[in-house]
Image 1 (cartoon, one colour):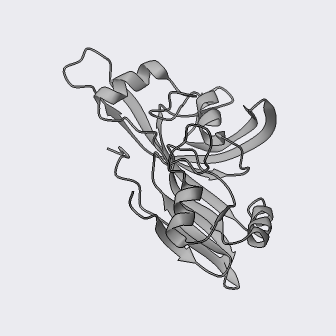
Image 2 (cartoon, helix red, strand yellow):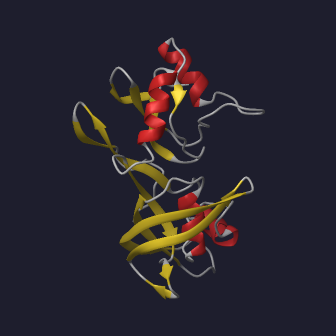
Length: 220
């Protein structure tokens, strides 16, 4: 396995560019999770501050020790930390029954039997259509959506965009399985979600870190 790319490091934390297909935390049936592999790479045990889904690419904060992890777990739930994503979605989100290119998705999400309030800010930056080659299927309209989290719940973006009628492309858990079958014929096979920008308080100021969209993103 290739070493994880480190975007930033100080005495407390590291920012890692997590690839798609890597589980953040180990467990039964999970091989080569990030927490174990990165600890081996660095030569000391890292502590998770937050998580990204296995198929989500993007910037992840890990701490160098338990005290730093406790501090940053508290920080990440405040307005000192801003997490921004890009997603390729099917169609355009609806708010109050109307398609809107910009808005706020408010409601609840449920994960592991727990219901929590969630808030997601979004803006559609681009729309286009894709067609499967040699197919009778109708073209599928896609949107590139910039997302900023108001809360940080498990699968929040995936669940709320699906509830808004605009599920993420290649999301077979919360999305549109039938449309995803068409999209696979168009070459869209991996979940179209990436945590591309993170603003955090370090070095006595607010700093923003950014990564490019991953290669598997389809934006045209």
